[in-house]
Amino acid sequence: MELHRSRGNLPLAIICVAAGVMVLGVAVEGSLLRMLVALGVVLIAGRVLVGALRPFRFVIGPEGLDVRRPGLRGTYRWEQFEALAVDESARLVGVPAAGFPPGVRITARHPRDHRPAVELLDLHQVREQPDEVVAALTRWSGGRFTDARTLSAGEFATTTFAFTRGLRGYDMREVDRLVGRAQDALAHGGDAERRAARAEIEQARAAGLEVALRGYDSAQVDAALDALCAALTDTDTPTDRTTPA
Image (tube, rainbow, N blue to C red):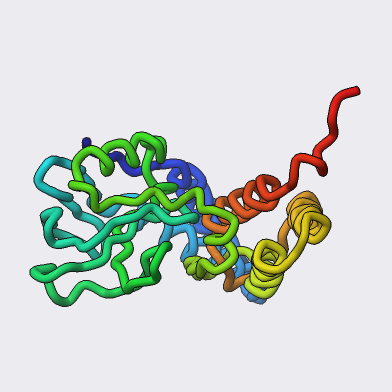
């Protein structure tokens, strides 16, 4: 199964680069602030544009993974991984085994047992649906793969959410507070505490999570909060649910 990179941000990046260049071109002497803003837009959009145009290849097959993307390039056999998993943020991670090529950065952890792992792919960055990718990994990986997107309440209470940090994303303190509140409710709270934690997350998202110049990846946070809300809902007891008259 060959995956294809999503081009969702490409048109916006092109527009931003063009607009920024136009503003720079017409800026007059003394318009320092406008020039700085335009330059910042061009640099950020240019980075997105360059990333979208870089070579990309990701193939899941009976022998292993054929990968070509920034920071990771090569063919990796299934036996070179002790385990693979898709975590709660829809990232595919692999725990290296003996024979795994040296020099690859360890940037993640297995979502179940927290062993050091390599981030192989962010499923939000490809056009194929996560369930399609999961099906291919389940078929070919020889029992090494775990779909950890849906954890039990107890597992959610102790899991570590390793969100990617970027130049612009959700405010880290607010996200950490919401995640910590939910995990505390799952680990130690009763039904009332779990409902309150879920309501707090829903209210914060309805109002709009604060965006910071340096923050957590928004897609990963959204996926994690969705999963936490589902876990908080699933722990309700039958007596807490409304029974039709």
